[in-house]
Length: 256
Image (cartoon, rainbow, N blue to C red; front, side, top):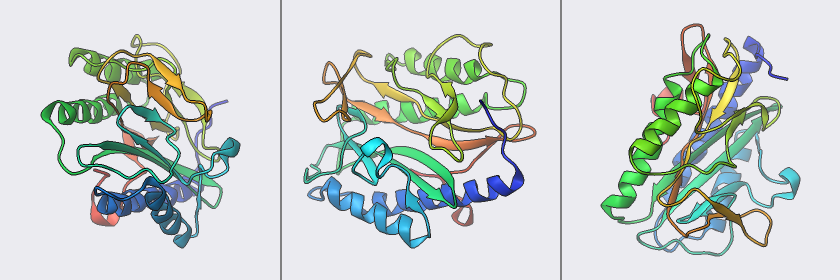
């Protein structure tokens, strides 16, 4: 069942989203060669809890971390540990915060030190595919319009999207209906309505689209070992478009 959110609910979701954005800012400022993903996880935990929220991911189906920290060929669900970041790495940080029963969810990919132009292009195409998708997020359009815009942008630049991982609704549950694929035909799927809250999140491979899950049951990698990137915002459908919830209004910035 797909719900639309009341003004009261949206106030809480905007605060949850703001906390997520503040956490991204703190992690972005801390990323450097030598820091461990476990240290980044602790930073996230401290920021989230200091704002009277809880990490959405921690304990979710048994997940051990406050964030997902996915390095290079890790697509999603990288578990924070003692792995040190190295110059030339890229890392996708996925953050969820629950504030008074409502979730914000956002992922962003960051560089560690210096990376080559091909890697920067992958990141830029992935980020732009998010905003191409969001251009279709307005009442009367369909979920498939978002999916199609993302996939077309990615494929036009010679990259691929994994078939098994999608965006989703978000609200009082971290994952709600509808499912939001990152590819597919336009004009299909649920009709978007004012008050719907969605987490749109393109994930993009430099190589082939197939993935594999590691023995820990969480970590998902590209099957061919190619680099991948991941960008995500939580939004609400408004009267004439959308509003990003996972941002810091007082700074007038978004992640990245």
